[in-house]
Image (tube, rainbow, N blue to C red):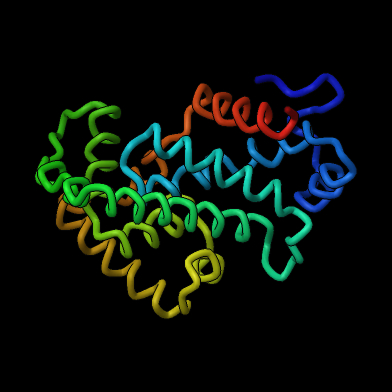
Length: 216
């Protein structure tokens, strides 16, 4: 969904400026928030939920929750941190509900982590292998790895998002890296930024769905 005619996607507005505008009644400006933070939220939620449709639904729910509670944001942490916390709580709540419905969905796909990278593998194949290896990590390691290594948050911001001590983040990140190196024969680090891509069509789909709800 394109930005409204009076908006420019690269205007240097801060999150606080966008929030202030939204609170005056200009709901369309919330699109700037979504496009700015879509990739981060996708990666955080994807670390918890495996089904891509469920991930998109959780993203939409997180944005709608944030939109409904914008006045509650008090700036004690960065807005991006506040938003990421909402997304993580939404994803965890959805997973808990799913586990109550059926225990069959609890087993991760361990076989994916056993694929070994071929020297002549294409970039697409390597990205798939890397994503599978990340998926195979235990959740508490996977969340830290994705936020810190893939999304490149600082140790402090990762700790705030996950409500952990910075020392715990460092320990879990170290352990996650060790597990991934073992799974990928130490070929992980150069390609980490390519993992869990958030493509434009998905971005447009999430933005359009949320805007339709908040402007209805």
